[in-house]
Amino acid sequence: MLCVRTMRPFTEKIISAWAKGCDGDIIPPIKDYQGMRKSTYAFLGVLRGSGDMLKRCIAKGYDYYFIDHAYFLGGHDRNPAWYRATKNGHVAHILKDRPSDRYEKYFKQDIKPYRSGSKIIVCPPTGAIEWMFDTQDWLNTTVGALKQHTDREIVVRDKPMNPQVKKENGVTTIDGFIKTQDDKPLQQDLDDAHCVVTFNSGVGVKALCEGIPVICGTECAAYPIANKIEDIENLQQHERQPWLNHLAYSQFTLAEMESGYALEQCT
Image 1 (cartoon, helix red, strand yellow):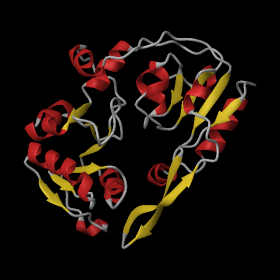
Image 2 (spheres, one colour):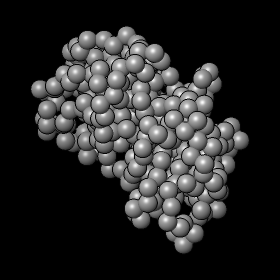
Image 3 (cartoon, one colour):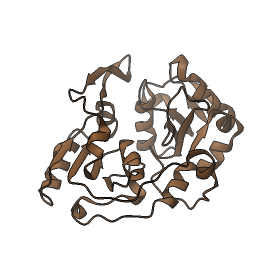
Image 4 (cartoon, helix red, strand yellow):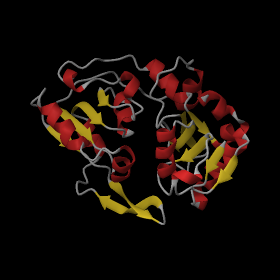
């Protein structure tokens, strides 16, 4: 397996742990199609060359493993730090039958009953995700579709620090952040939410844990128990425990990456 460097000292340890667990080789980002030979690749995130190569893997049909922020207990500063990992996908969007032991041991939380609210909260993709998945029209298309099925108030919430991208030295990287003008806490909107609609935001996972139905696509971890736009006024309240168990077996510590356990579970 070829494990692509992040080019950031702080996160190099993550891809190094994965490489150790799969007995892989660590390589720098490859800037063109010609340089990518047929192999299995591993990436962390979608910037600094990883996303460019990920797009080529998908186009060529190469297997890949994708690593990024965790579904639960995310953050580099945690001890231990957790990261999600998926084979041939951005998130673990295909529900697998898993036992509850891992969720109960590491991630158990207060899962609130499903409830009702009045507003629809829409969380659009960031600039980086728009580039990665070609979703520049997602917001307008989604809001337009919602208005065909409901007259509820629609609240659009961008990510507080929205990353933008640029091409630099042959790779796609950060071109600064756009700060959201609205400083209202997310929780304030969720408190009166009828539903959360998102492309891939982690808010989808948070919303479901708070008892708020979610509408999303396959690039969101909430997808296995999500609703559809046409059902916005007749939302289904899907059982969440199998989904929680599934996500618990889809994120890992650095030690679990180094031991090969993470690779085993993803495969």
